[in-house]
Length: 233
Image 1 (cartoon, one colour):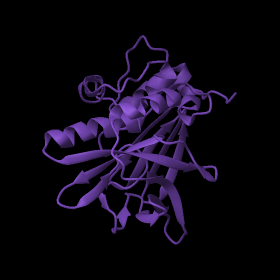
Image 2 (cartoon, helix red, strand yellow):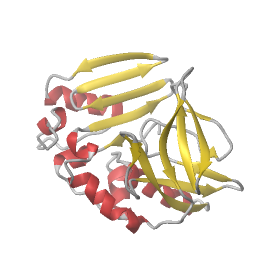
Image 3 (tube, helix red, strand yellow):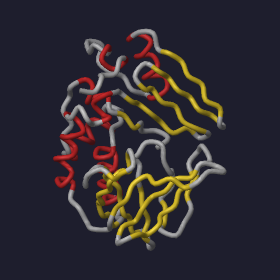
Image 4 (cartoon, rainbow, N blue to C red):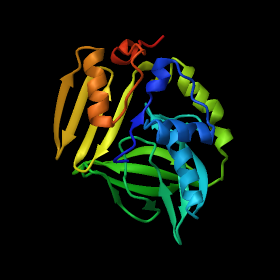
């Protein structure tokens, strides 16, 4: 999470994302890009399996606008290391170490994370310092296959109701915070201090992508669509 960004740039650029492991490897490892949950956790599961871990893909329903989204809205991992741990490198700003079901996790901004069990589901909650716990998503331990996530992966690339089609995002965890490029806004949060900067044009956008995220896009690509979000229809 400190080296591979959470990003949806290909969606805004009209490049189709296929849940095929060699293609994900070529994009994330060879071309030094990032991705969203299906890509990041899908490829990370492959890595963990190659390292000898038992890994189960799980489906989660993200909590949004007072209700839970559809099944397969999010992909996360159950990893057996001698104990059952949840690993999730594809939810953007979240816990950074594998988290057990009875543990309290942290992120680099000082927020806390926990799982609670309710009606055969596990619920991830986040707590800001001195604030109430807030629900992030819920999931069961039913094993899934990567192919099961393809319809929702397609939805999030194409639907005007998906947040991924409305605005570009590139975000990376820092040792003491986070750096995000949301449309034409660069947001850097360190030790609780937030700073925002407007990116004026595509030339500056390219520089920011490379400097903060290590992402380099081909020169012939028009990046205008990344700077200015689409309006919902």
